[in-house]
Image (cartoon, rainbow, N blue to C red; front, top):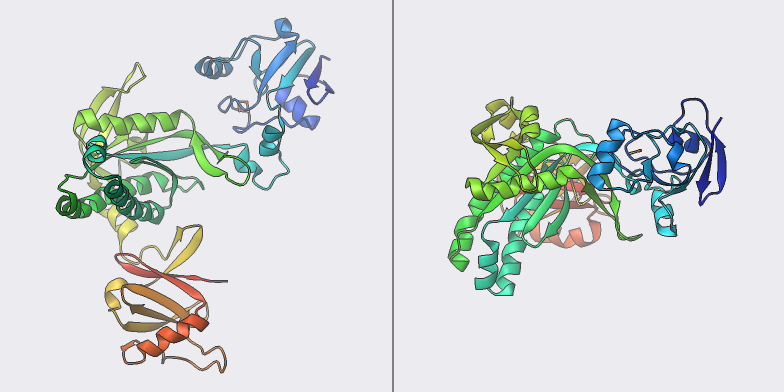
Length: 411
Ligand code: FES
């Protein structure tokens, strides 16, 4: 049987019949990364053949495709695809301490540190004519404008189970489906439509404040990307790496020439076509590619999808800032100065709205455990008293969106 010498581990492995280098190395506890599970998609199992390269078999079609796209050298092989027939010596291309720590299977974040290949929707947006704004407005105005826009859009993304990857200047990148949610494609489209609606509501404000016609462009693409943590230890952030990201960015850019605001790729359209209405489609050659592809301009969701995703009260919880928020009462049902007592996780909780803010706290005095309020809503003169008591008795955190008031338990 051929033998493999793995460096820098200096481990000699006897290859079993038909085994790949990856399979043999893992059997011998050599920690070769394999983010895609051996499907020739991630290239994290790449090794450098130091000796015996001439006796290695030809690359498989899958390996050739990936290696050519990445421009890897002749002696760099994918361990998951290579099944040697004679002895080889190889060096893993995870060579230094930082790489070892990031890919170690003993670390708690090992699944994301090494990365996982997932089917996700990548969302890209940017501000139309941003260069002109940034040249004509003061930096403070630009900062204010971007923050006001990003704050509202971030809420839309997170309400639709999206993950905000990064803000770059006027651009935003988000990922839908990080946790493998089945409805990520249609939720991404929903988020894009709601983002545009948010911008439409902001337009008159920006026009009055700065005399500008504020607008954005959004591009979405469904594809496979490696989802993993990137950054120095302690400063890692989840991100997506792969062709899908580049394609999504180019789809977003294609809006400019097409004169559209929201385009999605063909792969995403195939997944959501039963749930969306389109205005048009275009055939384009994306920047940096040779083939023409179809992009679809989304008009709106079909009635059933709209009802399922956006009906008030349809979603009882949402993830925001890493916390689970629970929908309570409609924003319109609680006027300024009002309070309501609700049942939440087997306790009575007071929700109080005052001065544009909402507060939530346990409806029990911390000393005598007597209720502050009866379990009915009212507008009354006790509001001032309750506001004082929240400073010592609050155990929930409340937040407000356009349609609902949300709370999260505070440990
Ligand atoms: S394990 Fe992903 S390319 Fe080999």
